[in-house]
Every structure is written in C-alpha cells, then in structure tokens.
Length: 271
Image 1 (tube, helix red, strand yellow):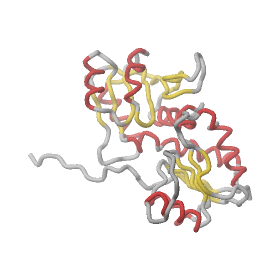
Image 2 (cartoon, one colour):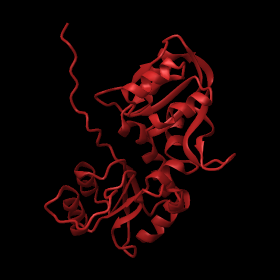
Image 3 (cartoon, one colour):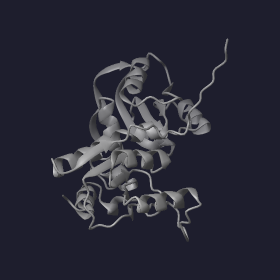
C-alpha cells in the first residue's frame, strides 16, 4: 500500500505548492508521511461533517480544498472548533492535506473542473500568472453553440450539486451566451477582468450587491451567481481521479457527498 508521502507527491506534482498565494496555508496539516493509506476522501471544507464522513468510510486521509488553519495560530486546544478537529483527526489516525490557491491556479485546476462541469471548452486562464501561460485564476471557455442566458443558467444549475440558495442570474434572459468566464470561489474581484475579456457571461461565487450592480450598469457580461461550496465541489472529482490513476487498485478514493454549504434554509413570501 502507498505511504501518505507518495499520495502527497502525486497531488503536489499536479497542484504545486509554489502556485499558492503568499497569504495561503497549503500542505499537510496533520498526519505521518510514512503511514500507509488505502482510502482517501476529497472534499471542499475540512469541517465536522466531512471528518465524520471520513470516519464512516474508514479513510486515513482527507484532501480538502479549503485550509483548516488559514491564519497563524498559537495553539490547537481541543475545546475550540478547529483545535477539536485536529485532535479528532490525530486520535483517529487520519491525515489532513489542503490544496487551496495552488489548486485554483494549477493547469488543470479548480476553475477547469467548474468549466468542464458546465460544458465549456477551456481556452485560457482568466487571470494568468504569466503572459500566455496556462496557470492562473479562473478560466475563459466557450460553448459549442450559443444559447439564451436563461437556458445557460439552467445548464449551470443542473451541472452542479443542489444548494438551498440555488443559482442566480443577472442579465437579459434572451442574451446569446457563447463565451464564458468562470472562477471557482469568491470571484467578484475579477469582474473587471471578465468585462475586459469581452465574454458573454461570468460564472462565479459570492457576488456582492454593489460590485455586481456597478458591473452591470457598465454593460459588463451577464452574471451567474453560485454558492462558494457548489462552485468548487467539481474539483473534488478532478483531484480524486488523479489518485485513481496513480494508485489503481491500491487506494480507494471517494468524493464527499455531504453538502457543507452553510446556507440551509430559504424563505420566500407566501403570496
């Protein structure tokens, strides 16, 4: 059976830590690199629900997109939420590895997975790390044929896991959509970039009222708003496939089926 270090080597060849933003915290959070691993769980969030899922599966490794300890800490006492998870993982002999902005910028990475899920052919990064390069934040792609914005929004909704907030669209329902920019995770800081690229629509998460409104007032691309979790969940399948190929027959990889989107209740007027 492969050691934890061998699995991490595969992940870091595809999601090089050097691609991570300087402020980020990626890599091994806990776990012994020499330990054998036979089962891996891939998820977006390292939280109580996914740790419990790993326990149910008997997974010795959790590979998460979001860091557990993004900001510097001076301790991990068990009576805190994150400290409690660290203790729980260690007591259970489970490792936690996080690939965050390095997975965002990698080729292929998080936004490639999102683009592929909604049926786009990827052309280039939205915000490349170097001119003409293939790494960077977001992706620009195209559909095989143009379709009305209302149809495109439905396409996106059916391609991604369901969430209580659902998928929102801002723009003319009849606008033909062919070229599309996507960015997994919070992406309204790239609104101007998407507009400059002249795409028909921009798909991302965590869009805020004022930036979105100002973008549309300036005749920017139509917007498709997702929840953060849903926009990044397709990456789990991409990363899982890497382990499947590298360790076929020796490691069972699983994509988390537990929704960790924080929004769980939606209300609308009765009339």
